Each structure stands twice: as C-alpha cells, then as structure tokens.
Amino acid sequence: MTTPQEELLPGTRRALLHRIAVAQAEGRAPSLVAAVVREGRAVWHGARTSVEGHGPDENVQFRIGSITKTFTAVLVLRLRDEGVLDLGDPLEKHVPGTGAGEATIAELLAHTSGLAAESPAPWWERTPGSLRPELADVLGEKPFRHPVGRRHHYSNPGYTLLGALVEKLRGAPWVEVLRREVLEPLGLDRTSTRPRAPHAGGWAVHPWADVMLPEPIEDLGRMAPAGQLWSTTGDLARFAVFLAKGDDRVLSAGTVREMRTPAAPAEAADVVDGATYGLGLQIQHRDGRLLVGHSGSLPGFLANLTISVADDVAAVVLANCTSGPQLSAVGADLVRIVAEAEPRIPDPWRPLSEVEAPVLELAGQWYWGTQAFALRATADGLVSLEPLSGNGRRSRFRANGDGTWTGLEGYYAGELLKAVRRPDGSVSHLDLGSFVFTRQPYEEGASVPGGVDSEGWRGIG
Image 1 (cartoon, rainbow, N blue to C red):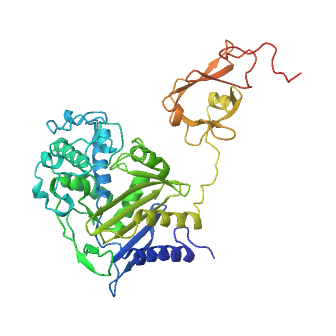
Image 2 (cartoon, rainbow, N blue to C red):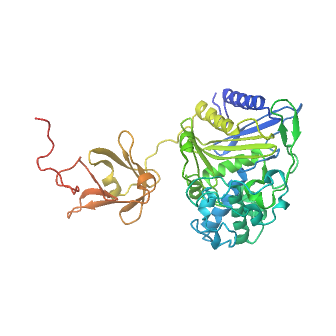
C-alpha cells in the first residue's frame, strides 16, 4: 500500500504536533496554531490551547503584525512592474515634502533608508493611530538615525511611507488597494485590517506567574501598512505558496524571486546569525537550509511565516501572547521536520527537446588558468558554468540571441559570456568579462593574456 504523496506520514504528523506542543507549553502561550504547506497546498494543521474544548483552527484570525510589511511590499512591486515607478526613485519624486524623501523606494523596502525604527512616543502599537494623523507625526522632527543606504536598520515608519506611496499612486486607501490587488485575487478572504469572528484575543502573560492580562487592540492608522493585518493559518498558507511560486494575477515568479533576494548589507552579527533582508522578506540560513518569510508581533500576538523554496515546504505559526515562544525557531523546525522526514522527490530526468548546435559545441570542460570548469546546457534553456570541484565562482547564463549570454548570479551577474572563434569558425576560447577560458589549461596558441611559455609544462629537474 502506498501513501498519497500529498499526505504526511503519521510519524511526521506526530513530530509536528510535538514541536508545537512543546512551544505552547514552554512558551506559556494561551493558544498556538500552525500549518504546514507542501507542493502548493496545506497538508497539516495543528493547535494547542489552554482553553478547554475546541482549539483554534485554520479559520481563526490572529494579528500578524509585521508580516503586513510583505503585503505592502507586494503592492509596491506591482507598481514597479507596471512601470509606474522605479525602485531607484527617491521617495520625493512621488511623495514630496515628507522630510525623508532622499531615501529610495528600494532602500525603504529593504530597511536601508536610515530611518528610525519606531515613530515618536507614545508607543505606537498600544495607542490609537489617531494620535499620528499625518506622516510628520509618524516620522518626527529628526526621522533619520543613519546615513541613507549605508546599513540595514529595521524601520516601521519606512513602511508607513511605502503605504503612503501606494495611496498616492493608486488614488485610493492602502487597505482598498490591498483588498483589490492582493487579497481578492489570491482568495485571502480571512485576511483583514480589523478582526472578524472567529478571532483570538490578545494576551500578556506575566513573566513570573501563570496569570494573564488582556492587551488593547488599537487601529494603527497611518502605521497600518507596517503591521495592521489580521489573518489565519489557512490564508497565510496560501500566501506562502504565492511567495514561493508567484501568481501572474498579482506578481510574476520572477518578481517574487526578486523579493527573496538579499537587498540589504548585513551587519557583522547578521553574518554570524546567517540573516539578511530582501524586498519585504526576511532571509536566513539555518540548519543548512535557506529560509525566507517574515515574523510579526504586536501586543497580544506573535506570528511567523517561513518558507524553504528548495524543499517546497512552508510553515505558518501564530500565537496570542505578547512574548513567549520563539516562533521563528518553531517555523524553521516545522519546515525541517517535513523536509528531513519526507524529502522532496525530484521530477524524473527527461532529455531536452532540443539543444542548439552552437550551445552543444560549447558544452564540456573549460579551464580558467589551471582551474577546471564545466559548461552545461540546462533544462530551462540556460547554460551554467561552475567549478568541477570545490568552491568557486559559478553562475547560470541567459542567451541574448546574438551568440552571447548574460550572467544571472554571483560574481558573473550581468557579465557577458561569448565564444571567440578562429577564422575557420572553430571556437578558440570563451571570453567572460575579459577572463579567458580554454579547452586545456594555458592552452598553447590560445589567446591567454601574458602569453604561454614556449617551453611548455615541465617538472623540477
């Protein structure tokens, strides 16, 4: 008897339940709910609660805090893809007079704008948004803490400015644009700016006693694009699929891949932690796996969305407490449990339908100096160049239609690869950004800068 591929094995399900049970108990969370996504659909849901009876399910709303920023980033990138703006545009070009307009849109998305982490007092998460009716109230008299573009410094006001940008260019409130352009197309009908029953209540748990205090639920007003949303594990599971694969009704696969690409300089501590930031997404290297997503918190609530694109597994974890369980660790563990217990089954190998003769002619072994590389034609119509052994510069290349290719990754991103031919049409060598690759190491007669010693290779006499 075989188990359908979309179902998790009983041992995997028990391991997932055990992980969230430990998180809820040790983190002292009133309730904790989680979901796992694999191969484009939710395959597991679990919950633990301190309340007798039915625990929260995939339709119960929790506040998701800064996961809201990822939704706001999607709206901004839609404007870029439509040609309405460029990520290199300074904010001043589209929203003048803020006092923070020298920061570019890309810098705001990646938290490299230099803006303050928070708005001026009082604490914006526990006070009504009506106290900050204008952008000036959010930014304060001295909005910058660092030089623009120099370092990653997480900024809630920065995403407030991005929300204002969306409103200015769309001519409608942020929430209306979000509903029309993201929530409705993706079927996220349980995601909203205000709680809709059934929803969890937000609690503060006393750090030294097992008692609780209800947290206020405030409308964040101008700060809404930074943290207002409520959602469910069901809706965030669908959002995770979108962030991994794209959806042409909202953003292409190429654009969500751009969101998942590091866009912020890492601090020394971030390098040690294996963490950085893309365009509206947190990125971390954990347990040998590249994870993307976002965490969120507001008084009374914690949230985490974690995705491993390579494993095609994602996890959503929500809790209704101000502090307690480390949900980013829980989310990463849920992904790891599934990825290790039930590794992704690769698609069958199939031969290419065709390979152009000039590409096949270049396939095989090449040498940069004495280092061996392999050039391969790939199933997606690209070519790849990578060391035959050990670490080294590697990249895929996209054909330009004129016999040249452009690098897509790493050191060779944007660099031009071309085959240099002899008068008789045969290939002499590859030129990659001025680097010469030959069929033999320092091949005699090849166009190697500095020439090749006429006495050739030799040993020690």
